Length: 409
View 1 (cartoon, helix red, strand yellow):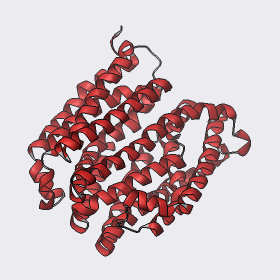
View 2 (cartoon, one colour):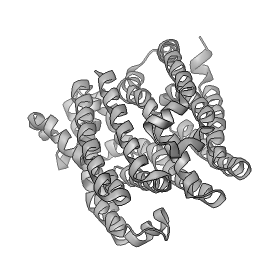
View 3 (cartoon, one colour):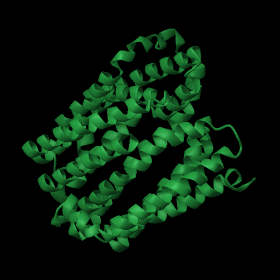
View 4 (spheres, one colour):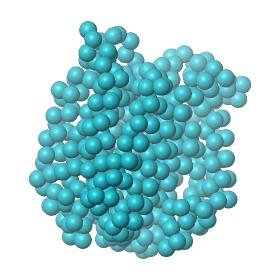
């Protein structure tokens, strides 16, 4: 069922990517990417980054009603407060965000104000989906993703067909709202569980449990989009807007084939690692992943590399042909990214706060510094070179940090 869900997401992503390539072109692809990263950052702030913590504690306490109610009630209050505050700040400073994201060439201030109004609804959807995931309701979780993607791609294509770049920006904005409607439709018959959300069960103890997850998640989900926007801006300075579009298109293609892995991590690996109590359990899960999933993923990457020109022509347009040199660096970097992800998820599963914080800060610094250095020497191709370099470094760093759990018998 997960395979079907991922296939739908990939097909939807391909259709969206093709539509962007046709209606927006390389010039507009970087603009859409900047708005997508901005939206990801404010969604993270509006949920305080606690969704992974919700998944863990719902999974842990789903048979203990009182503790579960405390976690859910505390989470709801936090997310309502944070999302409303974020919405007010973004709405009042819409002009500033417009110039920061789009520069002086575009005026999408109205779109940013609409985005601000939508923020609490985004946050509510993240909360509901995290609870479903924590309960291990795989059919509902995957069903929500399938329907959301089908509806989302239809709206996206229509908006771009009618309004081109502005339609693409609105599509990024509207898709999460449609996802909330779909989520509510799937869980409507579960409304009897609303008694778990009570004001009196909002406890300081639950706040402390969630706070470390908030800091860990915010560090990556807030800082990474900022770094990516900075890298796009630097590519624009060294090359031009078209080169930004090539790099953004490569990242989008990368996201498509990584969907299976990221879904697997969220749906299976994180809850599985959270429930492991034996000393050898973590090592066994990593070894199983390396024996089963990683070789298949590597074979898929190799196939994509040999078919790279076909992929560009089919999924994009011939306008994107100059991005072909990016493939070898991006695909190699993604292999190391996946190899390190399954190990690094232990930081989240076992709430290893300082390990996570230190590794994320170092990796973000490495990817930014190496991008600036390599872009300056090799142009936009340097950004994908930096992607490989940073994840090779990250892989060896997490192996070193968890060497005792990985190698000591």
